[in-house]
Image (cartoon, rainbow, N blue to C red; front, top):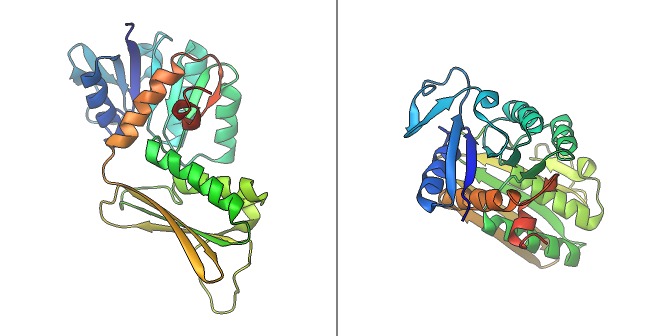
Length: 262
């Protein structure tokens, strides 16, 4: 069986180091390189025998590897440019992109295959399906989204919470930018019926928790997903690598991975 070569961008981060560990254990992958920012203290060190941590993706990629990216939006955009030039396939787990950055990634997927997902956990992607079903059935119900993460997380709301909001808005034909309400403050503002509340909490070392509330007269439905460690994300990312390795140009998500490419 042909092994898949991967380059991990953000190799020393929580996700990057876990993907390195699991990929090295699985036997289906070959680690071809690891990338970190230019001022990172681990630059030049050996991650596994024969593989050195670098700050230059362009010099270590031959275009045949799958690039796995868990970094920052600004760094990801630069990696996508190199991937397009070289012909690499990409799996992107970075979150916090601006609309302009997402447009660039979408345009780039017309030249190379890119899989992008704010959360590669199978459980969270099951949550997406459940939320879509609930939003369609409970059209008249008020909706709130609560996401909780560790205090090191930089972007808020989380990419997963944004994805949940997009699913609900699309299911109900709502313009997201008009109905989303970020937090609540004040004494006189009454809740609008179609409003979707979005609340972010940063505390302790919580890996990730997402709750969606649907409230109607006399009842509330609560849908929650909790992550107790990051391994589920890393396993999903490596499943995404196996999926994208077989694909040609195009933009893909975890839904296609879970559905077996359909």
